[in-house]
Picture 1 (spheres, rainbow, N blue to C red):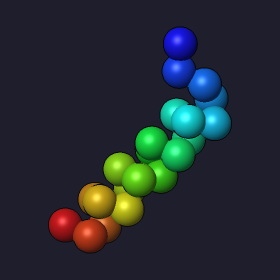
Picture 2 (picture 1 turned 180 degrees about the vertical axis):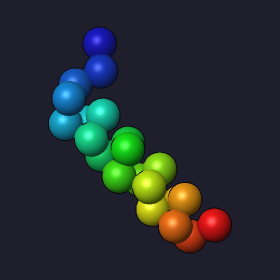
Picture 3 (picture 1 turned 45 degrees about the vertical axis):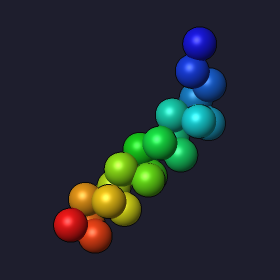
Length: 21
């Protein structure tokens, strides 16, 4: 199971990649 905190971190990283691209 994915922990809520990990999910937030994953979303944060994805958002960073989106802005980077």
